Image 1: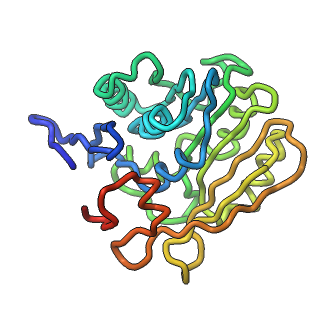
Image 2 (image 1 turned 180 degrees about the vertical axis):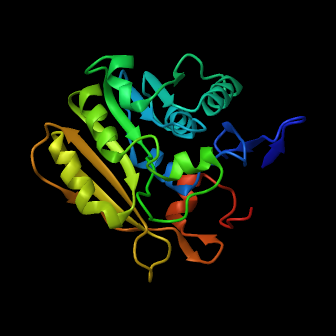
Length: 252
């Protein structure tokens, strides 16, 4: 269910789990990758988590809904997006557990202090150079392309922010997998778990979910693939369960 806010080009989207998020179509609306990342990630009781480049705040809100984590913070560089995410937190009455801060993730360790978090999550910009077309709308371009940060920036700051043996969860594109693993290991973030995501069972993967551990031992678990659709417009049973939807139709 979607409700448009009067006098604004914003809408309130029902997350189908008792929570809501405010979004602006002129900026950047969350996609299935954010939902899958929040499902893949885990924040245990008494743990503190940080979501880098939080955008609409969707990942902190979903993590608050599904985990007993003590504190979940979202860091967003674009002031208007951070303000909107903060309003979503208030809308869901999560102010005691979820916090939004406006700032540059390249300075995250300075903003929060070293070894401040048990968990870091990130749905970073996927595209570099000429990969894909840059959207003329800057907020959308920032979300999709490495304009304000690179994956090296993300990994470097994550390594500083995590406590010893802390966990890093991310979603990215498989075509950059070799680079991602190399960069993670460069900053002593050992890949421990990986799951490839396919749009259909007969299509190649277009997303990869990765869990890395700070100073972890080398051993990678490759989980069974995740398929998004049974057929066009109809989610698979697993995606249906992740979304907690009443209907399996994408349009419902």
